[in-house]
Amino acid sequence: MLAMVTACAVAAASVPARAQEKPNAGLPVIRDAEIEQLLREYTLPILRAAGLAQQNVHVVLINDKTFNAFVMDGRRIFVNTGALMEAQTPNQVIGVLAHETGHLAGGHVAKLRQELANAQTAAVVAMLLGVGAAVAGARSGGNSGGNVGMAALTAPQAVIQHMLLSYVRQQEEQADKGGVKFLAATGQSPKGMYDTFKHFYDQSLFQAQYADPYLQSHPMPAERMAALAEVVKTSPYWDKKDPPELQLRHDLMRAKLYGFMDRPDTVVRRYPLSDTSLPARYARAISAYRHGDMRNAMAQIDALIQTQPNNPYFYELKGQALLEGGHPAEAIAPLRHAVATAPNPTLIQVLLGQALVATNNPHLADEAIASLKVAVTRDTDIPEGYMQLAMAYGRKGELAEADLASAQAAFARGDANTARQLAARAKTRFPVGTPGWVRADDITSYKPPAQPLFR
Image (cartoon, rainbow, N blue to C red):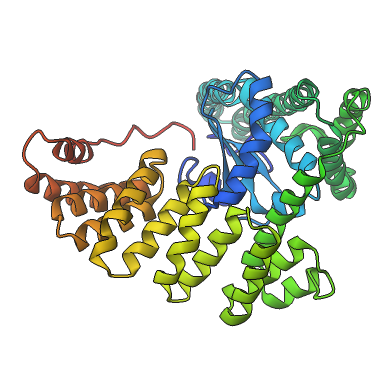
């Protein structure tokens, strides 16, 4: 599932089209405190086993309903919402994360880039040789000379393509083995990984009958399953089950995604009223608030809180529903509670800051600024946090800080031109040499890195 694209149009089969256009930006990323916390807990033991715990590797959630996960650099694992929604157990997701960690531990991204660079050089040489052959054929005056020249142009390209794809298949096999090793080191079953790839095998069995194995970016299904089966079924943890409390959190995560992403009729079919489980109630409550049935949603959310009064994400949901329903003042109390009890409340702090700003009460501006500053300090990649911070500073008439926060919001969105313009204005309002002036100057003097050879 390693995602890269080559200059000669060789791509890993699982790369979304949007990822191919711009590898490090433009992906439909979504953020959620509850889901990110769960994925963090899934990943950390695996990263420790791989020796990557200190590398600041984190999981990025992509808004795409296809089952996919991939890496594009050495510090991020990208997981589609579809993978989380389809995976019925924590172990299945953990198995996928272990496989992707195998890519990271093996340095596959950097190695593939080097192979691509080598392939580009080989492609250029092959092209020059082919052109030379074509010219020589033309000079000879024979009609067959042009055909020989074209063969000289196309044949090396096909060889290079086969070599690159073979290299990627080797990396996939290595990532499988690495993932199984990390699962064993953490006392977890490899069954989830096996079941996931078995699912892909069953889906692709018909197509594989007619596929050229040398034109596949991943190992052929039967070969992959056979190699994986030899390793996984000898694990002493094969029959180990996920703890019930972890399974419940996993089910709540899936319910949350379905509640937010599916239509109400689809949610009710998946979670009928006869299903009184906590995940089903969670999905229906989210769906009710998302589609305007606020009175019903509030009753359902309050019932969730009564069932699990220590669950910070039920309070977050209540605050978010009230805020988006036009009741920011009422949203503050549950959001404060969520911030105080969540293990990593950064995203909830942004939501709290937004609620405080939305009240238009200048007396709450200081609390909003404090909450938002903590959030954007912990995570600099939250444009909405900076925008709300700019509004909070504006409420207090602190225009220099408001301009700077607006510039930082634009920068976090990837809009460098707007960021530089706003930062330049902020510089005129800060005394020269002050911390705010220095931060603004950093943005105005920012130069984007050179474009990579491969994208």
